[in-house]
Every structure is written in C-alpha cells, then in structure tokens.
Length: 468
Image (tube, rainbow, N blue to C red; front, top):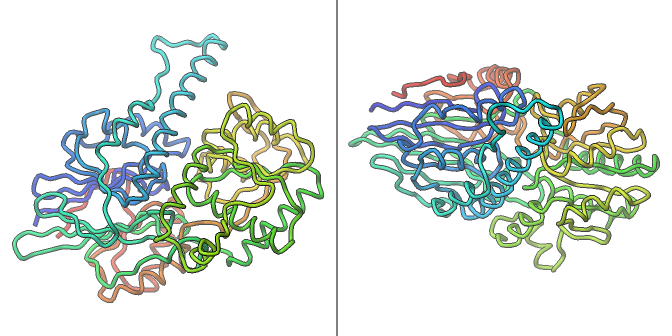
C-alpha cells in the first residue's frame, strides 16, 4: 500500500494543526487549524502545501481555532468536499468560525486605520484572512457523525470518532486504510483530554493502532490535582479582593470558560470566596454554553446529576452575561473587585485586549491565566512578566499582579497521556509526537521511549512520511 502522511502544521509547535493523509490518489486532511504563535502567523497566509480543490475530505477532531480556524480559507481557495465531525463539534465550529471571521475583519479595519494615522499606508489595503461570509460558506459542507460510527470517507479509507474528553464534542479519529485484504490503522488524538475532570466524560481508550499521532502540549510536565486547582482559584480571588482590583481572566470560550464558572459556583456554594460580580464578556462563550445544554449525553456522572436536580453549574448569583460592546465597555466604570472572563484565551484578539488595556497598568488588579499560552502570543509575554507589552498598537508597562492556575488545562499531562497509551497492547509501528513546543515534544519523545520502548519520532514542519 502506498500511504503518505504529510505534517502541514502543529509540528514542533502547538497551533496550526493540519495533517494530510494520501492514499490511492485520494487526499484526506485531518484538522485545518489557525496558527496563533506570533512568529508563525505568517503561515496562515501561505499556500496549504496541497491544492485545496484536490483535498477530498476533512476530518475534524474538535472546534478549537487552532484545529478548525483555516477551513474558511481552504474553502475560499477551492475545497468543496465534506467536513466530518461530531454533532457538538459542528455546532461549536460554526460559532467559532463566524467569530473568527468577524475578528479577522475587525483586525484588518483596525490596522487600516492605524496605518493611515501613522502615515504608512501601503500600495495595497490590508485585507482580512477571511470574512464572516467566507466562514458561512463552509457550513453546508459539515457532515455530523455519531461517536463510534464508522464513516466511509473515500475508496479504501473509513473513519470512526471516539470521545476525547478535551472539550465538548472533541474526538479521537481512528482511520482505517485498506487495500484488498491489507489494512492499516492510523489514530489521530487531536487534543487528548484528562481523566476525572468535571463536566465531560473521560477519554475513550484503544487497544490497537498501527500508527499514532499524539499531542504533547504538556509533554514535559504534570498538572495540579482538581482540588489544587480549586484552591489556586480560591486564593487568587481572595487576594484580588484584598488588593481591591479586578480579576481579568483570558479564557477560551469552549470548555475553559464553562469550567471556570463551574468552579466559581462551587467555591461560592462552599462560602470560600466573597460574592464577586462576574462578567462572562464573550458572546461566543455564551453561545457555546447553550450548546453544552444541548448535549447531556456527553456529561460525566456529576454533571448529569446536577442537571437532573435543575442546578445549572454555569449560573450563580452575580454572574452577568455580556453581549454588546457597550455593555463590555461599561464594566470599566464599576468600582470594587469584579471578575471579567473574556476571550481570546491567549490574548490574540477579542474583548480581552480592551480589558487588559484598562487593567494591566494597575498594581491592584490581577491578570489570571487559566490555560496554555503558546510561545509568541501576547498571553505568553504577559505570563513571562515582560516589562512592557504592545496591545492594540500601544505599549503598556506590566504592573498588574500576574497569576496562573495550572490545573484547568483540558490537555493531558505526560503521565496522563502515558496512562492512556498503556491501553494499547501491541506496540505501534511508529508514534508521531505533534502539537507541542519543540522542547516539550522532544522531552515527551524521550519519556515515551524510556517507558515503552516504542519507535517514537517528532516530525518537522512539512515532513512527508511513507507508511508501510
């Protein structure tokens, strides 16, 4: 069998997930994500490494922007095939892509105005990567699939989706490539979730895979326990109240925002924190929270029990859902401590930038990170306590208190991933380490070889591997 695997993204870096499987003149793309690292964003504008019209289908692991955010560009440039994903992923991806198209348009307009003001207009106007209209053009291509359902993709290739426990709707994708009586199984983890986390069911497990692509975002470390996570959040909220400043939480709209609300609800019920006016300042997160309500079949036992008791874990006294820009701006006039949860999670766009402008120079305020910050993003620069950062075209000194709660991550750490991999009884022919910064990926490679003896490699960007 002539099978090729091309690594077109998330190779020695975290974002921009994109893998191309080629077999018998067919091309199937697994994920089509946006690069979010500042030094790699130029890749979003480059060619895909394959003619979009030649791609037969897309298999989408989940709806995070770094896994689905370049689909509108691929469609705009000629892709017309089906996009297979779980029902919840399809619902969330539509919300995410529309929001991304809107941000692309707003960012382009902001840059045009700034360039004009600074007298450096170029020969060509600044154009968005894609628009809301481009995002909408993708919607008719989505094909929802059920978990564990086997779907024929092209002649000789079929795929099945299994719960990944990362975010709502996230899936591992098992791809079977067959010719005559010979078959090879390739397992794509996408982002691998964690065990015993609130809200979602634990990840599914597998006993066999010939080839395996596994993420390594936290391949060089371990997470805090769930109780430690609650304790860290509790401490951050109480210290911010004592200082008299705001708590600004850059948060991903899918999963992370809902989990922060879940823990805030628990801490308030346990009377461990003061009643805090909390703003979910993210229209996208509000819409995604509604999607959560549509899919109780994906809940774990604790979450399902709360729902049966008509106790919403996403709602509590003092929580305000902010929709309009005017409401968002009005938050800055409130005196006393408030919590502001806003996107994007890595501070690369959205309303969080405006809240950072209003709080990052205030020593009494806290910038509280609850998720991974990719290298080169504004969030990473703030987290590393860079003395000054550039936000919306202006430079601001970082004087706010910078805090981080580690255990919120929806990615498995190296021990959790190894535990998941140990269910595979026969050593895979090869394991490819993807979706991790270089240091993390290579550290996890060594860790995996030491603990399993498997054949493990870290592919580089645009590497092509022939599968036996």
